[in-house]
Length: 441
Image (cartoon, rainbow, N blue to C red; front, side, top):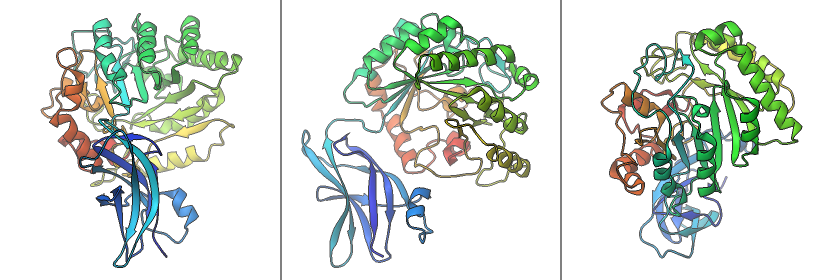
């Protein structure tokens, strides 16, 4: 058959810069080469490596990977006008355009889409696996909440037209954001500066009081709220999430769902999260049933990092070089989870537990985000930030927005190389090479 291809990203009329991330699918014939072009300039060739079930359903005879996600560099071309980004099939005799996007070229950083802003290092819980607050953690002194100097230093990033921030995590990387008395004022300030972005909140749920629920639902910018559970029963919840009370968080989550329903709203999305560890993975079916009964939108889970002193060897995932010693039992538990009949409108948001490439970047989107911690230090992800607390030699911040210009930090060779290596499917650091998220889990 002849080659087929489709560009999914960038979208038509999207603004792009000197580095373009091109995502889509392609079915290559044996006699043709698929090139990525800007106007008539060849930027690179298509290299499918992702299994796209949506494509394989439409073309059942195709067994090879069809999805691609890669970066190409653009030479100097006129900016301020539209250019044609195309995929063409080339052979010895002809060239055919298979997919076309019109893009606007300019001085844009079209890779950066997500900003995570640390709102609080305070926490009323001491969760077993937390690298900041568990009994095994390396606690840090210094700032405890995001003050106005930190928020003001972040605002230039959010309002700079060079960047296209579409999602903002106004949460706490290792803390409880609602313990910050300025949380709502800070979030409103951030959202008004970058109105195109959606804001998400991760919380332990203990501060979802009636007044806080009202204020959260009044914030039109907040599009998702996630409550952490990490267990399916009171006994294990209070053992793992020390300081938490099962009845309190269940009551608060129920009140949040009920108030959103009373208002007739579907936004924000309400989710729960479960850090999957050897200590708790057997409770996944109980957890799923309990959250389904409550009526959350997404019943979520995430792999333990298994990289910190607080969660070392707790992961249940496989790595490319080894199968986990609980893999068989893990699969039996997951099979039980998949057999649970969920109510309409409720879905699972579970990770893979075996290496699975769904994107060029890691499952934490390390090439698309910037993280600003409570001290103003800038990182590409929370794993590197946390290991910096533990003194890991490869876990250093890439700058500090209280001391340096955020644009210069993002344009630095260190930050740029990290992102490009990840999008070229190379581990940017030794930490990434041992991280489950780098392998799509």
